[in-house]
Amino acid sequence: MDAFGSPDALAMHETPAVNPDSIRASIAAALACDELRVRGDGHHFEALIVCAEFEGKSRVARHQMVYAVLGDRMREEIHALSMLTMTPAEFAATRAQSQQ
Image (cartoon, rainbow, N blue to C red; front, side, top):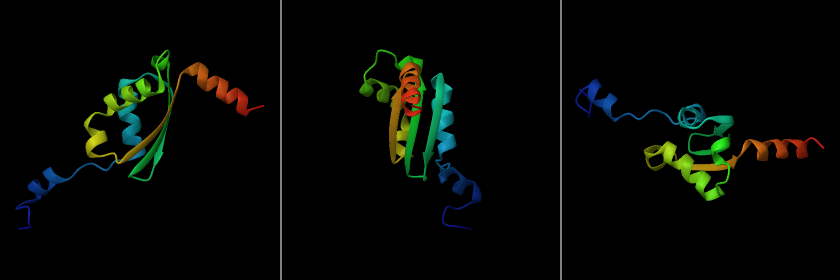
């Protein structure tokens, strides 16, 4: 018998691995994103989130929307998340500038 008493007890203490796909899925489940990219190393993550719901909101308000979506994951699983939050028009303008 291990320190947890049983294999079932051990399973209850395991947390799922945080990875870009799991963060992407959490965000996509709550926000209708036109573009959603997440990358990271398991501790530090970067996200590009393009969403029409960001229209008229400040950068802080946009980040608060994403933090609300991720909820407890931000406190318990995700060490750091750097975000670039844009509306579809802002994203299109950025893409147009980079293609010039």
